[in-house]
Structure formats: structure tokens, C-alpha cells
Image 1: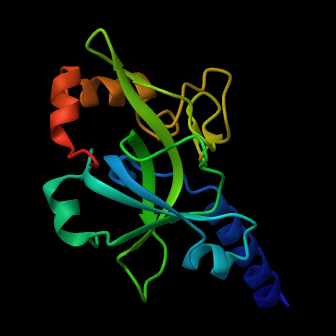
Image 2: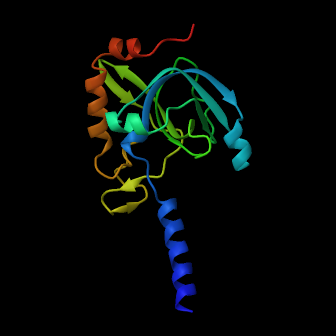
Image 3: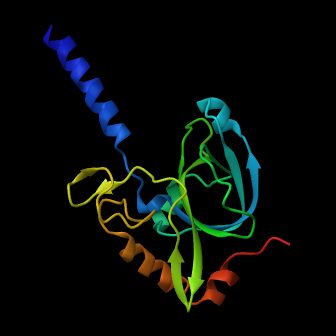
Length: 185
């Protein structure tokens, strides 16, 4: 009887932990959208009402270490299952993307996306189209806190201001950001 109770408790704790697994900085990519396709394999598999596939002219994993770049699978396909109608080709975005299928490790799921722009040589990150699973550092648990700032604010260690400053170092001017990603003609 104890074994059965332990097994049930273990399964319930594992599913709770998985449901509260926030993205990590290694999941952040910056890229320019080349095209947006409706539907996709992820939408069919999840039976979601809406879905999309994104193709990028170029993208960079913003915060992956050299070791993570070596061991994590490269991406060939990006898909999501939320409304993306406010984005269009040539938009530069920040996205949270993770591979979702061990059998197809080059398929990545977009968990959230936000447009990245510049104003007076300062990066501006718009609100995400969908709020990702986030870590509330004040309450030390999953959820959105009162001070939630955006797509880069849900990581365990640092807040959005920290990661936005790191992006600002990589792309110090509007011209540097534009030059980093080929445009759609």
C-alpha cells in the first residue's frame, strides 16, 4: 500500500514540476522573420485551434554558452500554437524556443515571442504575444508577479532589465541590430 501511495505522490509531483518548468536563457533567440505559415505539425499533434510556422532570415541564440551551442540540437523548424497575427515578415523578434520532440530534435516550439525595436539607439522589447511559463522571483514559485516586465522576466536568476542590457551590448545601435539579420526582399 505504501508503494502505491508513493507512486501516486511521485507522479503528481513530477507533473506539477513539469507544468512549472520555466524557460531558461538558453531558450532565447533573436531573429528576423522571413515568413509566417499557418498551421503546422505541432498544431495537428496538439489539436490546437490555431498554429503557425516561422522561418527566419537569420537568428542567433542570444544567451547560449559555447557548450550549449555544441550539445543542444540546431533548429530547422519553428512552430507555435497561439495567435501571431500582429507580426509580419522583416520584424525582428525575441522568442523563447525549445525543442519538443526527442524523435525530431530539430523541431522547436515557440513558447512566446515579442517584437524587438529601437528608439534613440535603445532597444525596446514589446509585450509578448503570449505570456510564457515564468518564475516569480519574489514569491519563489511559478507565476507572474506584480513587477512582471516581459518575455525576458521569467527566468530564475535575473530579470528582464539584466537580459535586455546584455542584448543592448550585442546590438548597441539600431544599425547594428538591422545589420545582424538579413532582410526579406
